[in-house]
Image 1 (cartoon, one colour):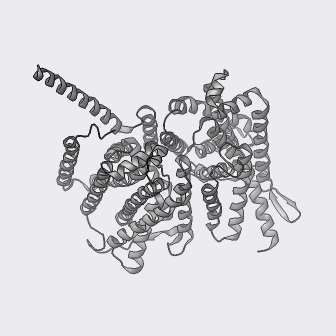
Image 2: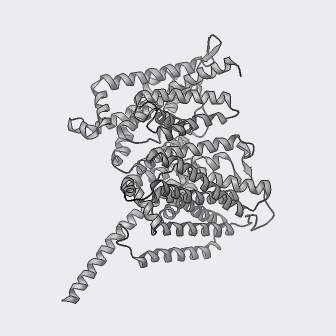
Image 3: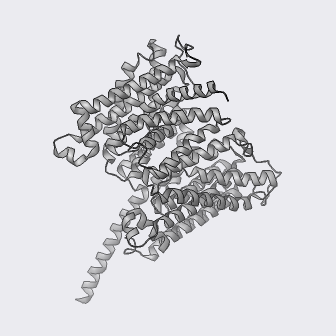
Length: 286
Length: 343
């Protein structure tokens, strides 16, 4: 193992972390406000990927440009899910909520399987092989855009939550549902918007991943546990924690892949996740 | 809660109906085509797994999303013993069950000691099962991604857990199901089961009344893990093949959870009812819409979502509600009769 390989692994881990952070931020917002663990999060990522894929295939819209369409589309899907499915069970026991989002996951995945078949698909953009070289480290342009885009969108969301009235209302409802109601915030409306934003985040992450990742109806599975690990590691409900969690998971994954043979490296983030769950279940940054 | 309305005769009626149905099924099953028998075996098999999951997730209220870990340990351990050293799968089944019980004790002690609850517990069990999947995928002993193929023997052999017809498998899984149902029934009416339910309903109150929470949660997981592993061995011997995705993937977990929640979580017969309903629906859907991939699971998912929204306690919730009203009517009648007599 030479130093260059290690450096390369660190860089690709950090790059992956940018997208993981965006996925985690979305999941975190949904948990923070609704107190619901969304098992369908990976499937919503899959929907984001397919949206970009079809926009590219039919209308030749560049995947990055298609963000202008996929983000509002996924926001709308999120609002509908919240309205139809989550609102009725918001006061139900946690297990029922888990099973409901699991049902949603099964539904979305098999809808995609039914509509688009089990084939692996890929978007071929003209700049697919572009590589930047910085010192001795090679950086794939697409992965770099995904990293930067993911962080940038997460930053936008952060500013939105901190500075705007709507953002403040969302934070208020997440901290104290009754209190927010008492000061005249329409918590139901906030729930719709929060689920919409959370879904839009993961949809945007899907779009950013589309140019360099094969997509299939089950692609969300890859990211479901990753998203949970990101969020739990950083601390459920903690925004900065989700970003840091994204980087930690990205780094441990890519270092694990270099240090251990085969796919055994994935053990490392899982073990770290379990250790953190055991000793600091509230997360590292909370 | 149930102790007040507890009426042993009424409970035994359930069992009589069940046993009669089982006997009837046994008789009919001899006449069934191989395909229908396979469907019945699947119903009983998933009911068995759901009942095993139900012990820790239903009765003790600790929602596990990683039961496939125990399933896979059972499937792999008995298969490895059989393929590598020729140990009878029956012995392997018990050994795998004990190994899974040990794993359950380990996971339970670790997670419950740190008071992981709800979604956190679900996620940590999920992470454990994923770790096992990755190990199975990379370890030469478990055959890596190729999995394990159980060598076929000529004809039937009880010792090898291999049979030429499906009927013996049917009797085996039926017996396994009856066993786990008796255990569930016993839990429903024993001190141990009351501890489980007390923990589920209000952990802090149960703790303050002197229930050792860590101990009883772990016991629930150990019992549940043991039975789940037996199901793993049955699967391996019925299908003659396992690989990391089958044994440790999320599909088995989802089937257990979905069927149990649909039938009624935390009830003795919920998993069986849920399994029968879902399997019948999905077989019918499959035969009509088989060429459309995924449609029958979509239907199944919609059903699950609707049940969660409108009948959060599943089919058994409906039955129980009705039963309670009935018994209230009966007590009312008794009161009326009593009053008349006294007059």
